[in-house]
Image (cartoon, rainbow, N blue to C red):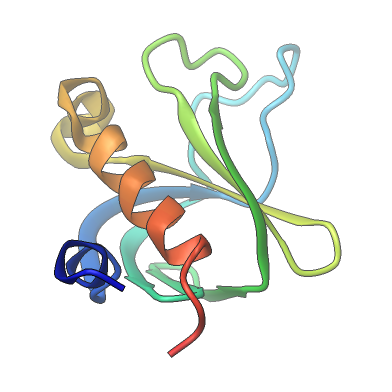
Length: 121
């Protein structure tokens, strides 16, 4: 592994992240795009979300993609498929969710993608 690749999988913490456990349906009547908000620790092969409502540990990541969900016309949520068919969705929640379109989601997606393709430390 090159030094550039090693630095891309160093543990990182994103302090203002929104989380959902499933995609929002287009007809779902919810005002909030997120179920919880908190910090996301990204390390090789593992993600740990610490929210106000609880902690979610994610490993055995099988896919990372981005997609718009529900009525959120601003953000492309980062969708993480893991474990036995489970899903977690994340977006940069800084600036009331607007930071995502200013590059926050790209940085978050790159970190999660690097962690997913790295062997577990």
